[in-house]
Every structure is written in C-alpha cells, then in structure tokens.
Length: 250
Image (cartoon, rainbow, N blue to C red; front, side, top):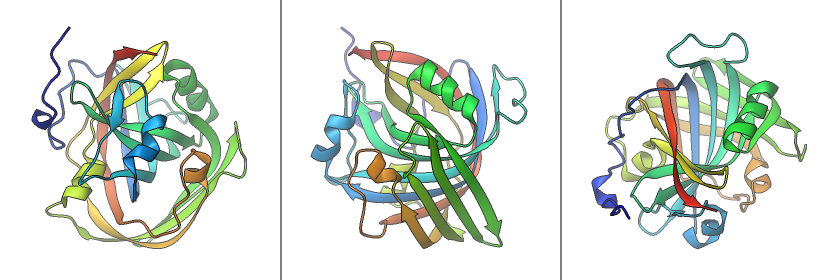
C-alpha cells in the first residue's frame, strides 16, 4: 500500500501540475459566498475515503455563481453554444487520505441541458438543468437560477453583489475556500479525484446586496439564516482538467 502523503505538504496555494489537460474551459465572473458549518454535520455527505477539510475546527458550505466559457477537449477550441453557459453550485470542502484537498459538489445548476446530461453520465456529478441568467450593471452583478430538471423546481437562487477593491493578501479563510485544485466524487464503483490546474485566483472583495436562495437546502444542507461570513468576486481564470484517479471502492 502506498504511504499517504503528509497533508501539510500539500498546501492550499500549490496545485499539482497536470501531465496532460483533457478538458479546458474558463471560469468567469465568479461570486463566492460562504458560511461556516459543523464538520460532523457534513461528513456523511462526503464520498468514501474523504473527510471534511477544516480551518480552525470549522468547514464551510459555498454558493458559487459564475459563467462557464469555452469548454473544449484535448486543447481544441471551445464547443460553440454548448461550451458557454451560466452555472451556480453548492459545494463542500474535502481532503482525502493522500492529503489532496478538493471540493465536493452537492449540486451544480447549469443553463445547457446536454452538458448537464453528459456530466451526470460520465462522472455522476449532480448537475441540474436550470433557467439561468447573469447580468452586470457597472460594478453590480446579479445571478439568477430556477431549476428545471430533475427537480425540485422550487430550488432557486438570486443573488446580487457589488464588486470592491482587490485582495492583495488573502486571509486564511479566503485562501481556504478558493485555492482548490481538484474535486472528489463517487462514480463508477469508487471515490474518484479529478485534478484541475489554473493560475492563482485574482480576487476582489465584494458586498452582498441581496440574496434569496433555496439551493443550499435542496442540496441536503441547513439553509443559512445568517449572512455569509465571506463574499468575494473574481473576474476568472483559465482551467484545465486531467484524468480521474480512483481512491476507494464504494
């Protein structure tokens, strides 16, 4: 059995370079909203072989709105129309026995049906087809989503942020919730880790102007009643994904 890596050696600001990028895309106009949550509460929701990643004894649930742009394969150009769409995800933070930190998606709303079906079939990711829109008026961005399939159709989200000044030195929390280079998912008989590669986030602080959301509750988590403890914006980064690695049978 391979000896596990020291988790402290795998820092949050050090991605593991990909040998080959199989899937390229750009994530643009991201709004990051985060709330603290008890690790014991979310542990049963994570894939086998992973545990909640924590910061000062807490883990976090994130509501992330953004635009996916130019999805393409093997270094090729982005797929027209189907490769660009709005997305909003609900996510948790995980670490596996080899010290690889990642995210676990509880739901991913997306505007295009074919990418939703492809992601659900290939990696068993919980993509949902939704009616979505991202608008911008000056420094104010608004993200809206209403689920279409597979339901519940009452799962909706609308949030508005005002973009502020640049984050020159991210706080430990800001680094914890954004510096992630991989995801964990249960698919095809095992827990899998899918690595990605991108530059460090260009982050800006943001003010939450309004929020009406039921996506977090629909994802099996307590719907927050308090304001988020962290609100950030990023204009985006280019991203590459490699192949998946199986961690543990399910």
